[in-house]
Image (cartoon, rainbow, N blue to C red; front, side):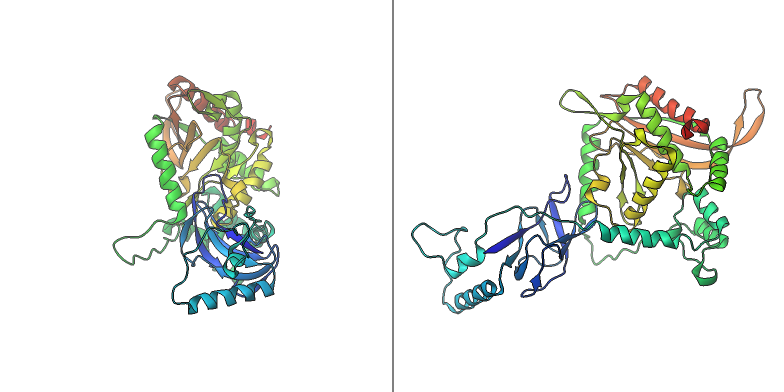
Length: 423
């Protein structure tokens, strides 16, 4: 019996997939659990395992072709004999003057099965994509190992500017990253992604199609409004330096922002809800998604159950997810289920951003760069402070201006009193 392999649904929002690469050729044997195909989804490229053992009878979709989910992309024969029989049937049909019109799968009652029906018949069992979990995990661990090839000063400087050491090429002995490498990266910025322009029109890939669909849905269905406030970050920066000097786990300003948001969302659950069919649906857990620039696309891995995590746990989880996003190894469970989003663009030197709300949420927090700013104190003294602008984009159907303002001020209070974040 031949098994039909179909384009799998690898995420809740996936409507179609692009076949990137076949790992097998027609006629080759394949084992259950062996890699069969690489597919580009709306969020990541995913390697998919074969669910059936047998021999590759046909590969029906070419590399680079985009098809809807459920489309048959390959046939797998259970035995080599069955595959040879099907090949013989195809050869015979090619020698015929006129090939009969292909009928639906199945054999009419009282008739003998033809070679063509043997090749196409299948029980229509759902194709279950077993996405290998260990391959991307091991690669992430290997990339983490690279971060040790840096001086402590270089690591600290990169942390202060929200830069991953994986983006920097070291010029020290043995490729070690030194302070000058980080400073050069800060000045030059992240290397621009090379884009080939073969003609006047460049088709969108699956990830960009997903972003287009979601952002158009958001801006045309959600009534956005925006509130902003400046946050004094001197104490947070000092605490982060002290913490990193005395702990093996290093934390970033983004970790502080995530933790502050999680605490504030517990106090203001409307910011962790969303509008649905003339009702407000509150989320059971606080799942914070953090936008990550991968160079060519924006991804937002989700940290689940933030309400029960310590600052260190949040940091460890976010580091793993962010690096998986940057090497494009996110799994569907890594980016689904976000209830609140954060877009931090401060590492690029941008001082403020008012981001677009993601569908099925009521708010998103935009975070700008920390800059030295003259500030008038209560006694009218003018002093220089490390200031950061945060902006909330809110859904007016759920969050009135006063409630969103209170929520934003709660985040500000927690960041300006960072010891609250350690409890």
